[in-house]
Length: 407
Image (cartoon, rainbow, N blue to C red; front, top):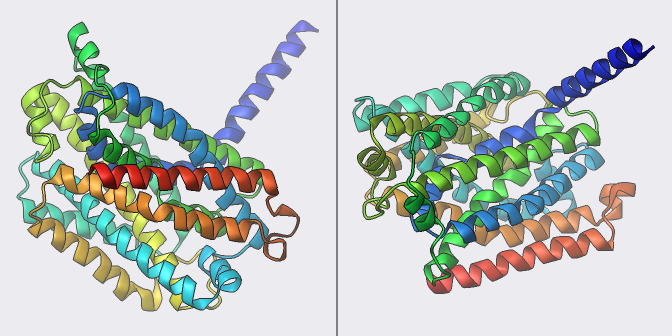
């Protein structure tokens, strides 16, 4: 009898693990991609400021807030069974749908520049000349995002996202002294922390993620709210863990003078070639994942805002007439990465901060939709969730004021 119970319990555990694996989808992918090349570079720069007590605490605080927002986007996807751009257009009108789509598309192009920079930095570490590295990165992203079926791309990107784990052994190779640990957590609150906090918040929660979560659920295989919530929870945990690891790499690396100009070569100079090569591979992979997901999110935004109509769920948003716009978007971002004169670390921080500045507007838009019973039916959020969302909006506004006054 005991053997039978043990067998049943083991079978249930295996089934639970299998169901958890099956739940992995757009939530994990979107949050893994949100730890993008620009984000990882900004985490290194932020960690090098030696204020990890503040920044790691902020990451932990942002985790449940990120879950709340992404779960709300999931809820909208299930309630409406429509792409997010269509939902905005029907609820808030054509003008706002188009303005919102254009602004977010412009913000995404800035982020895409940092993704191509990150990918090119990784390639440049193995001797590929900078212009060739950027062109190669552009060609890879264009090829992957031009496939015909979304689910195939999602599965491929999920497998590739496992390469992000390489940041963990890179951190373990540092062997910091006790003094380095003390230094990393020694910083007090200074005016510069305000802007770094704004950038960190923009990396933890970006406007494009709402579009990605809602549209990817609509186009993908997430069948139940429970599975979608598990997917988001896994993504949030992975996001915080990997962000903390990279913050530690920046914080435990001695010296910080050249980190803004070229974080990767700074790591090589301070930590050695092996750590630099591993970080370079991680940055390339992070940039690749983000460039694919962000460009697809932008394509969804533009298609649903400017080319409304019936579109097959499985069809990639980059197909048909929007392929030219997709090509130009990636091309402009890649060209900017070739001719860029702004220090890479500085651009990475500002790219994340700009997203954080638009986040309150994105959250207000999401809240107006999620509370509308005509749109959401019985899944409309009640007053407690509305108050929670209002608190998140207030937090981003406060960070914006603090960040811009101390930048």
